[in-house]
Length: 212
Image (cartoon, rainbow, N blue to C red; front, side, top):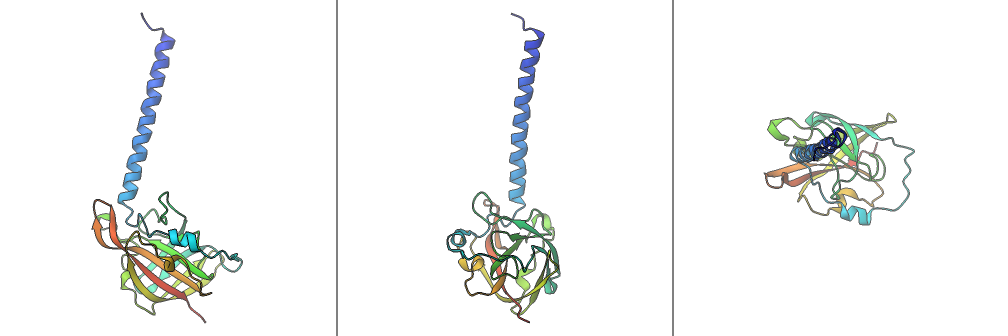
């Protein structure tokens, strides 16, 4: 039995739709795979402890704007600041490219009481320079600053550098109850694991708001 022209065209249309859907699925898969392989902070330090223990006191944002620039003179960092939340696996998200940094927007803004967190890439693939390649060269007493959307310049002083495993729950990175303002910077360090597409450790630079 021969198909009518309309029936034949209808089946061709269905086949074309199915092929298009399959193409979109492959495109999504390779896009996700490429992001993972180019994302040396994924997954970042787990923040389950932060979510469970974060301070429930109301936050007054009237004094500080959103962070827009991070400057670290001693390692020649002058980076734009993105705003990120959590990934689907409960990790802190990261900036898309190697040159910018990302502020964790579920925590306080830089300058507010508590621990503000910014992450950035290091050890980008193919030897491409990344914003936090030299983060480990900072020393206690080094200075960094944030410019916010209200034009404030908030200065911080490095207090400590520590390394952690990628899945550690580290409440001190994301939470602080001392009534002071802190800015903590996170990047990757250690050995690259090809199977996990991730480095073996995370470097955290703890800094405190400078009192003038």
